[in-house]
Amino acid sequence: MLILIAEDDELILRTVEHKLVKEGHEVVLTRNGQEAIEKIGELEFDLVVTDIMMPFASGIEILAAIKRIGKKVPVIVLSSMGQEEVVVDAFDLGASDFMVKPFSPNELILRIKRLTNK
Amino acid sequence: MSQHIVLHELILAIIAVLVLVLLLIIAVLGYSFYSYRILHNRHSWRQIIEYKIIETIVGTDKNTEHDQEFGKYLKEPSFRALFLDVLVASDRKFSGAAKKAINGLFYQFKLEDEAWRKLRQRKAYLVAGGIQELAAMNVEAAIPEIKAKLNDDRTAVYQEAQYAMVSFQGYEGLEFLEHFDKPLSDWQQLRLLNSIHHIPELSDVQFYSWLKSTNDYVVIFTLRLIRKFRLMPMYAAVHDLLDHPAIPVRVQAIRTMQAIENSTTIRQFITCFDQQPIEVQLEILKSMKVARSRESGDFLKKQLWNHAEVSIKISAAEVLVVLGEVDYLHEISRTADTYDQLIQIIKHALQEKKC
Image (tube, rainbow over all chains, first blue to last red; front, top):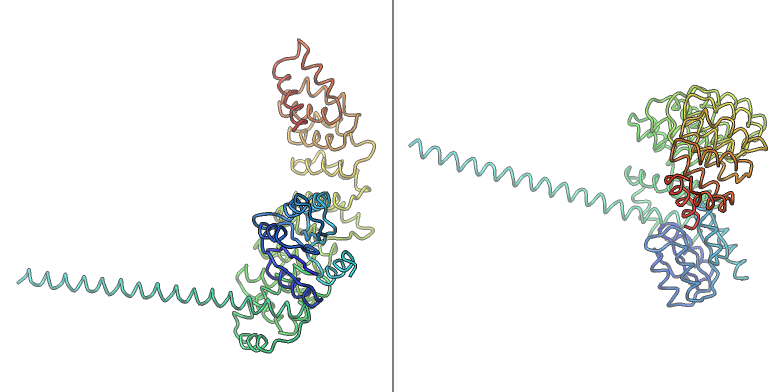
C-alpha cells in the first residue's frame, strides 16, 4: 500500500514512517502542505495521513485539493488539542478519521488497517 | 630630534592598534567557530537522539553503528542535557506504548539524575526545567520537593511547580489555590485547565472556598473550572459574584452563568443589567446572543432605543438579529421618528448578519 505522510514535526514524521515501513507499506514523506498537494496530484495513494497545521498549506487545504481534483483517497487527520472546530471542517471536506496529538502510533496503525480493511 | 621621536611613537602606536585589531579578529573568528561547532554538534546529536527514540518506539532491529555512536556521546554532559530536552519534548507528542517507551529511555540512561540536579540549581529557568522534566517523566519521588517550590517567588518556578502538581495528582494538585496570593496568567490557567480531566465528588466545599478567595485570579480560574465541568450546583454561588468588586470577575461570572444556565438566567441578567458597568453589560448581551432566548426580546428593544452607549445599542441590535427580529429592525429603520444614529446601527447589525 502506498501511503503519504504530511507532517512538519520531524520526529512524528520519521516515527510514523518507520512504523508503516515495518508493517510492509511504501511511504512518501512530505514536510509541508504544498509539497503534499503536489505529490497527491502526481501519484495514486491508497491513504493519506496529514497534520492540520503545516507550513505553506494546512491539512484542510490538502483535503480541499483532494476534493477539487476528484481523487478518492481515505485521509486520517492528526490534530492538536483545541483544534476541534478545524476537525469538523476536515470531516466536511471528506476526512475519514482523526487522531488528537499526543497520539499512539500503534493506534494509528490499527485505524489504517480498519480504513483499508487490511 | 623631537619630530623623529614623535614619528617613531606614532608608528609604534599604529602597530599596537593593528596587533590589537588582529587579536580581536582572531578572537571573533575563534568564538564563531566554537559556536558553529556547538550548533553543528547539537544538530547531529539531535538526529542521533531522535533515531534512538524512533528505534525504541517502533522496536526496529538494533543498528550497532548508531548504538556505538550513541554510547560514545552519552558520557558528555551537554549531550545528556540535550537528550533529556528531546525526550521531554517527545513525551508530549506521543501517548500509549510510545510514551511508555520514551519513559523507559529516561530510566534506562539514568537521566533522572540530570533532572534532579537541575531542580536543585539556583537559576530559575534551570529549576523550572528540572520540575518540567521530572513531571513529564512522572518521577513521583520528586513530589515533596516540587510541592515546596509552589511558594517560590519566581514566576517561572511556581508556575512550573503548579503544572507539575496537577500533572501528578490531577484535581488534588490544585490544593495550592487555597492560599495562593500571586497572579495566575491566562496561559497558566489554560495549561492547568487542560490537565484536569476529572473532578471528584464532594469537591463543592473547595469550590465555595476558592470563589471567596481574595485573589481575583483564583476566583476567575475557579469560574473557568466550573464552566469546563458544567458544575450546575455552583450556579447560586456564581450568581452571587455579580456584586464582586472586580469587573473581570463579574465578566467571568456572566460567562459561567450562561454556560450552566437554567430557566432563571435571562431574568437575572435583565434584573442586574442596569447596576453593571459597560464591560459587564456587553458580556450580558453576548451571553444573550448565545442563549437566543425570546425572553430577552423586549429588554433588547429597550436598550436599543434608550441606552446612552453606542456599543450597547450595537450589541442589542445584533442580538435582535440573531433572535429573528429582522422585520422589526427594518420597520423602525424606515420610521420617520427614528434618529439617524439608530438607523446606522440597525443597518450595521443587518449587514453583519449578511456577512
